[in-house]
Image (cartoon, rainbow, N blue to C red; front, side, top):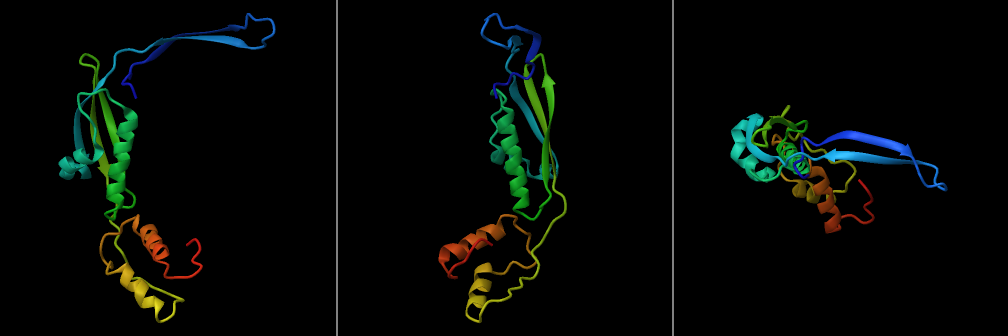
Length: 172
């Protein structure tokens, strides 16, 4: 989180505690933090190359600032979520790091493997009465053949529950 990508622990010393009533060891660790590295160039490869500008806005990484790999991970998760929302349920994203020890920068090559595209199939509704079934079908809308949004089923069930269409609707 602080850009200390070359941190080292050159000396670790453990010795018995000097206090008579303490059974244990005292550990001294020498830490050499090294310089803070900044985020350098970011380039998108694979499926992401066609959407580089959109993905740059999505990840919200700040170039020329101290690199924070927690933020890098969060950005990669946003990319995967975006792809899953457009039908690519098995999408993965990873960032290959290249370190420049002279300039103290880290360049990233972000590769997205979109995987196969999944589309909505036919909606089948079973067990509802003749009044409830059309209401649910209308709420679901026309989705057949369109890219599947991985968050859609849970959002749909929440909408059904929030509207109170069914009495005693439990977990689904």
